[in-house]
Amino acid sequence: MSDYLINTSEDYNNIYQKSTNDLEEFWSTLAKDNFKWQKSWNSVLEWDFSKPEVNWFQGAKLNITENCIDRHLESNGDKTAIIFEPNDVNDKSEHISYSQLHKRVNKMANVLKGIGVKKGDRVCIYLPMIPDLAISILACARIGAVHSVVFAGFSAAALSTRINDCQCEIVITSDGSFRGNKILNLKKIVDDALNDCPQVSSVLIAERTKSKIELKSGRDKLLNNLIKNASDSCSIEIMDSEDPLFILYTSGSTGKPKGMVHSTAGYMVGAGYTFKNIFQYQNNDIYWCTADIGWITGHSYIVYGPLLNGATTIMFEGVPSYPDYGRFWKIVQKHKVNQFYTAPTAIRALAKEPIDFVNRYDLSSLKVLGTVGEPINEEAWKWYNKEIGKNKCPIVDTWWQTETGSIMISSIPNVIESKPTYATLPFIGIQPALMDENGNEIIGNNVEGRLCIKFPWPSMARTIWGDHKRYKETYFSAFKNKYFTGDGAYRDEKGFYRITGRVDDVIIVSGHNLGTAPIEDAINEHDLVAESAIVGVPHEIKGNSLFGYITLKQELDSEESLSDIKKDINQLISKQIGPIAKLDRIEFVPGLPKTRSGKIMRRILRKIAHRDVNNLGDVSTLLNPDVVKKIIEIIIK
Ligand code: WT7
Image (spheres, rainbow, N blue to C red):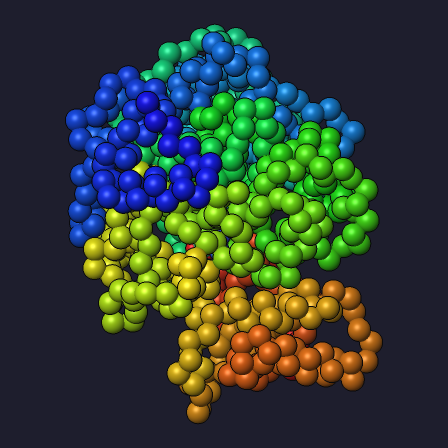
């Protein structure tokens, strides 16, 4: 029996070595000893990256909800599985125990069966961060339906594209959603989306805001009524290892969103094992990830990873700024959160606010801090470490992707040291490679290249829904026999990895490869700078020159001080990176265009810098589409 827990650096070295010396032996022992199977596998791994085809635990049978819920019931039925923290501070939080979760998932599963959902059917879930969201996901998994969660901030057009791409016939939504002091009419968005989705036969509506909604007869059903009459027992559907568990859309640099397909067994093993070790989750810990379940982070590290480990996981409905910028820290104090996992964009936004919003609260329960989603700049890292972690909580900077299903490169608390801006070492079983532009692997340390993964890992996505050719082209064609991540990375003298940003963000200036992240890091050191984004603009002599968009923490009044700041910024860059990375043009803007997951859309900034503003593509899914117009006005004077 081996749980392969990683508690010391020796454990890490030994287990890592074991996992790479004999990949199959390692993963099969881990899978066999730590998860519940209805039938064991015939072969651990079959793979061929040239097709690409990857099969893990072939022939095995299981259901992931038996692993997330049923197996904890006997010893831990009364333990809280989910703490729901509502948007409004004055509303009570809700504690759902594992046995209550079991009943609620079963009821929901029976409702789905009742409207005809069968194994393999796709179900679109468009819900705010309320318990029904986690319950719907698990109910689908229980009966073998493939869930496709769409972030409930997406527009009707984005929703209908995703519903149609995987031909969902069922949509689960709510009457509305609370976001800070706003109420969004989700049902209306669904109605608009469904004008383009004739195949949808049923819409299930959870009650949240009690907003007035219109029901389309024959199609729309109120969930409360159905749940009331549903049985609370439902046997598990027995799934094959490679049966799809879910689809989750991620946007590519071009074209329509890609429906990444995740498998049942491999995803389970990856999400379960990484959660336990990277967050060093101990039995009675309270764990909180602030992501939305509409993203992979929420799938793997709010729902599946924690529940697979019998953990207590918090679901927060609201936003970090409501009723004020102290909300996150208020929640940490209230629930005595032990592990806290968020994104650099949230950290930067909160760091801009008066420190009193932090210092009002007791954060002494915190043991581990996590960050994910984009490179974290050094200033934000230091603020997080000092003000939130009080210099005593290891920070796990976790690098991974929707496509990888679980964390791939990360430090491990008290095992692999944290190093600002470094994701550090590959997780167990993961073998990264840095590649040069000619397709050769770059060996040794103190080197930079394109980040690839050499061998399959259990939780990798198996295909793009309906477009295996695109899957092959996007991830397996740039480098022979390797998975290409699309990111660049630097490997330091200790073998630690620093993610330098998407490779399409690399700018070559006078023959020097410059990642945008280190330059932005240097700029953000400036006391008055809130955020920055660098793009390349074609330059006659240098090939490219650097153009910087800067947002300031506060408005300044005189032209003169702005030009001082420009000088200071270039001095900082010269100091941190070298004069080669100095910016040719610096513009102060009121905000940066961001995706809903908080990533800066450099593509748009690049086009504006190129004065190519008639062809910006779809900006409607941005978090802040209005800022684009304002930036254009400033740049194209
Ligand atoms: C891309 C994947 C996986 C959860 C959320 C994002 C960037 C992610 C880090 C990190 C530097 C990071 C990469 C990656 N990214 N985590 N810790 N440090 N960059 O999922 O939307 O699929 O985006 O996010 O560029 O390729 P996603």
